[in-house]
Image (cartoon, rainbow, N blue to C red; front, side, top):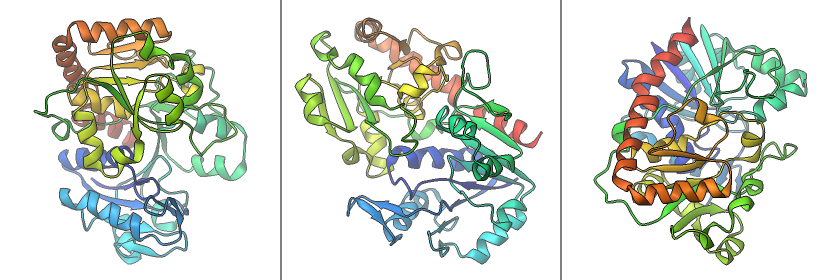
Length: 372
């Protein structure tokens, strides 16, 4: 098939966001499909050099090219600026891609437009990486927003419980098919020795969906005194209140310092001992079943994970290599179990990544539903 994927690499030029789109592109290509990338959100890019939104897309377009070119995709992308101008591949080239395409994948709102060329692609799907927030926004009934989603043939979500009795989140008449983030395993396998710290990369509060009280800050305060209750050592790459966290014993670095490129982000994960992470409050309180694409990368690198349960433990192996927690006491126990037999947990982490998140397994299932 020929597939056009819309993502948000330039809008959020961070390593984790980049890998999210890139692993779809690489995984689909490995299956024999022809892929190209577009970005058409109508928004200005974030320029971390200026630490501001910018009408000049040059940082974002360089970032896209530098991310895709090493994988032979340097001529397979186009960025549509807020003013409608195309950068990278021309508008005519994009029209040609779309004219020949079989499937349009909108990942995380990579386009908020139904341009004629996108609408004409025979099959169109939306992949929701931010469950609960998306569904609650749809439940408001805004005609434009609901109409936008209705034009897709299938809707997918990273929330394994969305649309099931396990979660109270309203679906507004939409059928949400569950999928996991695909991981290209060979990109994460490493000979780098693990470090001595449990780490994660996190944003304290998100800028979008400000009317939904659902950020990580509400969950993290529940475990903020953990460093005083366990011998485990931590390092948080965090966009948030570093002084407050350090006062409670957390070692912190600025999130951008390890997310400036996809290579920095990968290296941070690979040199970690394991992940310790919390989820956004909305994911937890609504029992969404969301599971982090970042945690998948830790597992693929052979790094165990002790991460907050959003309901995902009903769908994935839990106990060795991947340990859920709900209370601080469960978190402390999980950290101790990893410390007690690290080798076994590391082996199992790799196995879980291969069994559940390998792009060669995840993507054929997605395509079967998308094109069925």
